[in-house]
Image (cartoon, rainbow, N blue to C red; front, top):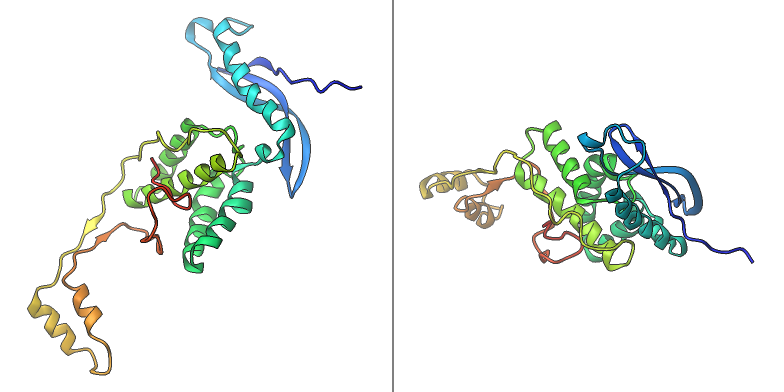
Length: 247
């Protein structure tokens, strides 16, 4: 009988990094297949080790930790999912069952246009805090006009995706988004309330058959402009896996 042996992986040096070379299962279009020749960065080569051909001893425990997660996916197909496959096949349908269609539309927009191009191909199981931090930093660098509130919403969406993945055993904890820090970005701009006299003049211009109450009251309430609105989230709890606290 053929033995089901666990894979050890082999450490190789690629450029300035010690990497592990291995094979792993992948899921594409609902089909599970074996992919060979994969590599994963373990750690940077220290200056004093630049002449080494073989890895120093401290690299091997990193290999063991990584390969332990790879081998766990051998009999658990869900652990072979990419971030994109999980977000679209599990998380977005989960959102759809709990929130309005308008809220789902907003989440789909953020996912499709901002987050998906940057993380969809990464393995859900292997995604780490440095990956998340680099992605948030890149978004802020390429969109300097994006306000901090919008970055916080993006971080919250990522946190919610990984929270649900942990809850449903698609990956191990902790949540890799938790320890990220929001990049420097413009703060929300506060608008000022109209005085009573100005509001009355505005209401005088509104036709009598139109309800003036809500429009008039809005003038008394200062608002904060976050740059990009994320509608339909007012009722979310901080620990909701649809949109988590993000940290």
